[in-house]
Length: 248
Ligand SMILES: Cc1cc2nc3c(=O)[nH]c(=O)nc-3n(C[C@H](O)[C@H](O)[C@H](O)COP(=O)(O)OP(=O)(O)OC[C@H]3O[C@@H](n4cnc5c(N)ncnc54)[C@H](O)[C@@H]3O)c2cc1C
Image (cartoon, rainbow, N blue to C red):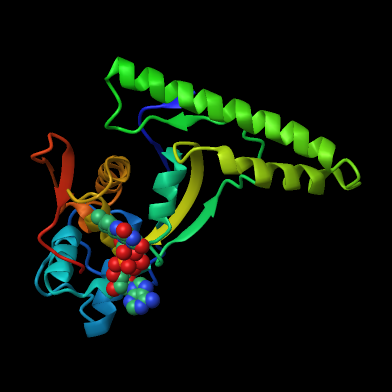
C-alpha cells in the first residue's frame, strides 16, 4: 500500500473534574482540556469568579498573549499517527517535550510494509512509477535478506530472538519512505511548538503536511489552544501555518 497522506486519530484528551469547593464562573463554549487550563490559570490569582467576564476561549487567548504558556501544559492530547514515513518520524521525535511509542522494525515483519509517497513526487506519473519500483526492489531485498539470515542463524534456538536478529539487520535496506506508526502524547504547549516549527515554510513537505493535518484536528478539538494559528497557501503553492504568538 502506498500512502499519499497521513492518517490521524485522537486517542486521548483531558477529562476535567471541577472541585466542588472552588467553582469557576464559566462563560462560553469549552472542552474539558480548555477548562482544565483555565481552572489552573485562575487558581494563580484565585479569580474563579471571573471578574473580567471572559469566555474560556477569550481567557486562553489572553494567556497566550501574556505568554503564560505553562498554563497550557496541563492539557495533554494523544494522537495516533499512521501513513507517515520513517524520514518524518526521525524529525518528529526531535521534539523532546512529547512522549512517543513507535512501531519496532526489529520485532515487526516489514515484508508487507507500506510506503509513503513523498509529496513532491505525488501527481507525476513517471516519477511515481520509478519511485515505486525502487520501493518494491528494496522490499524484495528485505524479504530475501530475512530468509537468508534465518538460515544463517539457524543455530539460535530461540526463534523470536533469531527473527529479531534477521529483521534488525535486514531493515537496513528499507528506505526512508517506509511507513511507520507512532503514538504521540504531548501537552498543548508542546504541540504548539511542534506545529509552529513543522507547519512553517522551512519544514520538510511531508512533516509540514502532517503538521497542518494535526493542526486542523487540534483546532477542532480545542480551539482555545490552537485557533490563533492561521493556515495559508505559501509561495511554493503548499499549505503552511503561522501564529502571531511565537513560542508561548
Ligand atoms: C526546518 C527545520 C530544519 C531542521 N534541520 C535540522 C538539521 O539539519 N539537523 C538537526 O539536527 N536538526 C534539525 N532540525 C531540528 C531542530 O534543530 C530541533 O531539534 C527541532 O526542531 C526541535 O525543536 P526544539 O529543540 O526547539 O524544541 P523541542 O525539543 O520541541 O522542545 C520545545 C522547547 O523546549 C525547550 N527545551 C527542550 N529541550 C531543552 C533542553 N534540553 N534544554 C533547554 N531547553 C529545552 C526549548 O525551549 C524548546 O524550543 C530542524 C528543524 C526544523 C524545523
